[in-house]
Image 1 (cartoon, rainbow, N blue to C red):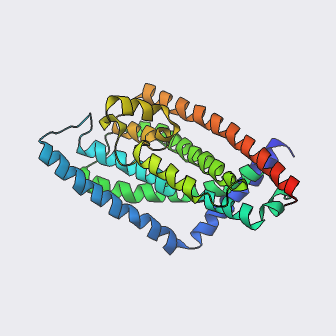
Image 2: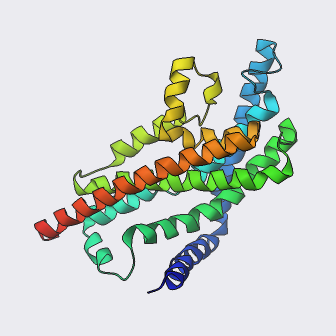
Length: 268
């Protein structure tokens, strides 16, 4: 099968998955409605914080920049489907044996399905969060021409999250339940990833540590571009994301080969 045929095949998976999501619009919009609660709470929290501090700016963030930063971090994290549980279930229930015999690449199929859900949720979550942020904190401090660059970083962030969750899901070859690993991963993204608090507010040593870890490339990196866009910062963000993505692809390939070999040896 040539490259064009492969792209079309996985593109169809993306399309079908998105269409399945649109088949239940109430459920889709209900999940996005949680953005209203999250952003409203953050607006109130940071409004009081700035008032009590008596400052107009904290670590380079004024109120609009802080709120728009949080809109993007929450949009990215809330738009990522829970991939690990699906892979975990396939391995534990033996469905993997059937999946391996199908005419598609296991990882690419899951990536296409993941994108179908994520690319449906991403614009919807952002639209809901952005509408509330605009009403309560004003327009984003970002020129319109910079949004495509931010979108590219957000797309890479979602892809990077996929690679992490795929690696965690594949650990089901060795562990009965991978929920503990995903729980730790999510909490690290919440903290060192900059989901709730920009890394600019961290103490020096902790900030430097967080910036070199892959978790900051999922939440902090893309969102920091909204708070203060700079072409050099965008290039650094994307380069870091691509570096960690390449490293995780190598890890996933290793886990997959060893895991499949383990299935074959055990007759699964």
